[in-house]
Length: 429
Image (cartoon, rainbow, N blue to C red):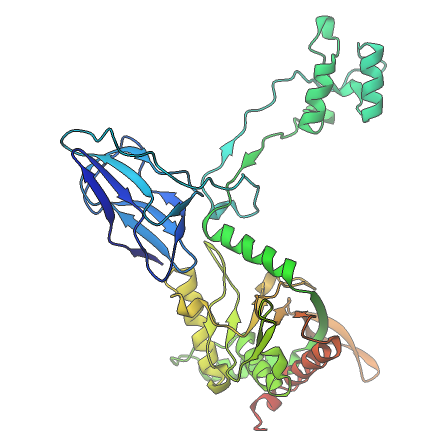
């Protein structure tokens, strides 16, 4: 959720230098994640100029005055220190020729990512200029010097796929260089042209934060995963009955998640080491009495983990309502910092795309994450025969530095027993 910060600037005659304001809470720098203006644009007072992101919030910086943009303080992805120049505006009066140069820390190198929808528009690279044609006719030999032939043979290049740029179509070393650089032929059998287009995206904003945290988690945590098959036939029957009983009422529809949350609460009572945070720098494990369950949620901006606090005091319907509320807030960009932090154990689910098995990354500094895979009807051997059952795998990961494999398996087995006999979820200990 973007917040509006009051501005900070210096006025020198006709030049207004808008600086990155002190956003508070000890923030020393922020990442520039988007410009709303460009050089030459005429802006009005209070018009948004740029968005910056800190570890705590995304902040929109407004213009202090009306004027014309004459300089930008950095590219998207740059890190700006508090008090650094963000933008310069030309207003009526003389320009300030003594203003110091804009100071930013350069953005990181470009990198390809898998979610372009959340990033700035791609910048296409120019296509290669080499001349390459369709395969030659059967028996036709390409024209090339012995040195070029040997080099192509050593590199595994079929010269019949190249049309030379030399005299009379002779294949030159440069043609082989271009071929190897582009990664293969520009045409395929049947005259179909291969797509050699390449796009570059800068990893910025939330996508950069996610990348940094995932890399840090995998670097510092000794992950191990445990997968167990669960028969949810009885639970699905109960869920359908409960949902049918509240049809037309104000209560939210039940999904699998509230049942899993209730099962986790019960299992954590016997395995308190799973509901913990590990401060590996201080070498301290903090076990929490309250069960604060993070729900990994895909949003247009990337993965977020809103937190259902104190699941141990919530009933099935309350858990369902809170999951729905938090997911909508996260996807709408309205979740607060408090709603996106403080989890002690996390559930991650890809829904219908859950697949058979996954290896979820632990939400550091937590020590356990429960992964939900796809629910499907599978043939199961029961009582001397094959019967159809609603089956699903739980793919969970644990921090092996503090969780033993036996304890992790026993924890998941207890969750499995509760889900397969859902009446046990509602029984008092």
